[in-house]
Length: 328
Image 1 (cartoon, rainbow, N blue to C red):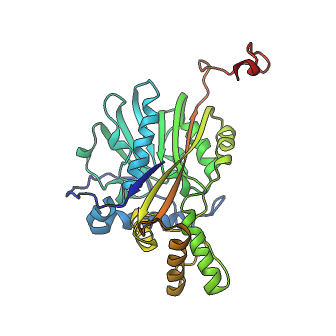
Image 2: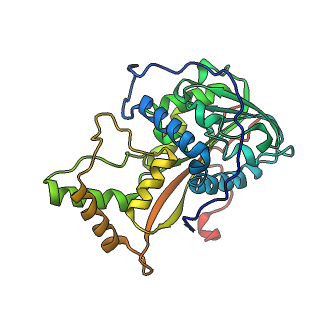
Image 3: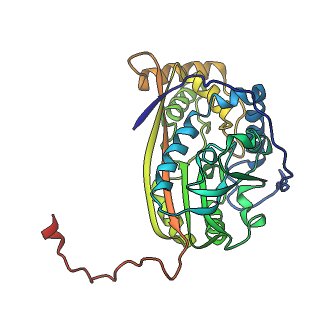
């Protein structure tokens, strides 16, 4: 478990690259599993990219940068060089900037926020870059089936409404024996903030409403990957913990990350006295000895391969030659 401290990142002036992207779906589009307002999420991400010409946005990259580093460790365990890697929900390229010529020749960055997608210039990347402005929920509208050697997704799937459907699209977009590596926020993410707000709202307002978006439970991910048709599944859980001076700095950083709540039918305000009570509860229940407060980001890791005839196959049930009692 790593503990990160919220500190400013040195900012540098950067130019924006231009690219004509695919049109996004209408804000009035109706589809299955409408938990999140995808149109509002895109606007939040656009605003986060524009904040102080991107410099304020860069100071809050620390969680995604940390998870991108950990994803690279998993990618390097695959002893294969790819011609192209698709970075699904890439944002400004937290993961893509870590790729080099030893891993791939080219990276394709796809994100629903055009502002965030073009926040960094091509000079920040070590490999060739193509950028596609499109909705992550409609991957097969812009990516041909059986065309990708590897698809990576670093902290974008938790805003997907139809996660089972998107996993199926990812599998269909992969070539046979292509690999998918994903990282998404799990159900225990920001449990300190969630419980503090709920207790404060119950005390001051006599009821609760969701202010932290629901996340996928770890136990469901392997089932979803299997239902989508992936083989050779690997699912595990990790945590990133960050210390903040108070609850208010955490909420400010979540806004600057573009990670505001976008549940359909959400309340867009919290009473001032409720926030004050939540801050006090946060420190009382979860505060550190130095006066700071922790925020936990649970990361669910998933790896799946598109089936192919030449892949290793599990042995048939009952074919084992060694008794587990002898091993243990």
